[in-house]
Length: 340
Image (cartoon, rainbow, N blue to C red; front, side, top):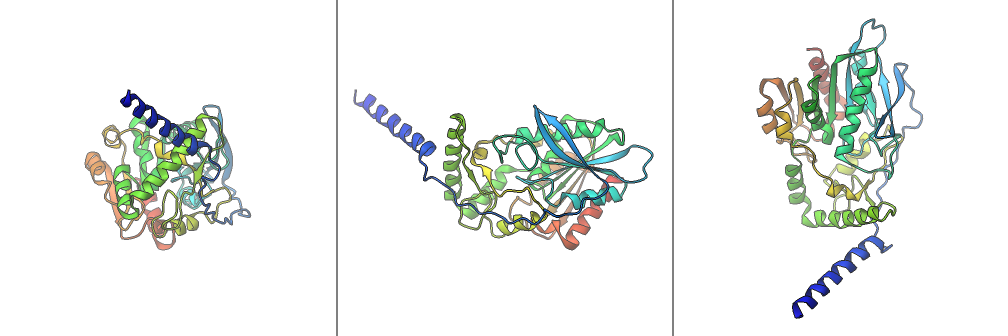
């Protein structure tokens, strides 16, 4: 009888804890908004607004086509990093690719930017992979594009998406990973070592609140994507908030927040097993001083891909590759890879 009473009390405490997490109104996370300056940008003449559907949701994209091409051209499908939108720096890559004779396609993931999906700012690796596959199918449906020359370009957390897509699609012509993440466990261990277990447990607490509220049809609970050191956010490494601020300045749609339930989102297919199925060439541009992603996480995948992969090491931080001479260097390397 005593044992049953103890069990009952424990269950009661757990129930009260969960009810409190879900319903208490004072459980909030301090917002860390980022000011944006991208409302008055000039629209390139080579850019076309496009829409394609995924599971009934309309996704917003931009297709860039080179001038004066009488034959179908190759196309680079650019995938944005964690919680990013298509108007965050991707256009300058797309314009360089069109100058080099390639088409380029950028888009907003479902639940982000100008694409449909509720709740807003909901991260799901499974959904984002579906979005990329739909973008590839759209590119192949266009008569201006060579269906045998579709490349997947990814950066930061999407730097491994090309591997996952090419593993299932043998017709992908090549993949580019810029400052990529290939080992979520290694990334997590580095973050916990730097920011402490309290950072992780704090995010799990907020994830429980968001998950519980979602099951009851209540409004989502969010925390910032990037924040200052010591705050509640997904990335709080020194320079993370400033880095996100720098890459979002041309955007009018980025929001520095994400549904907290992402902490329970599965990591998706096994990258090492997926890389065994990849047949196309790959280019990985690694930032050796990366504070966001583990800079040595590419070794195992590179070993599997063997001669099909080119590794370029850069003695810079995670966000440096998007700007100035580092951008110029990286985009030259990417165009050289595309023209092989």
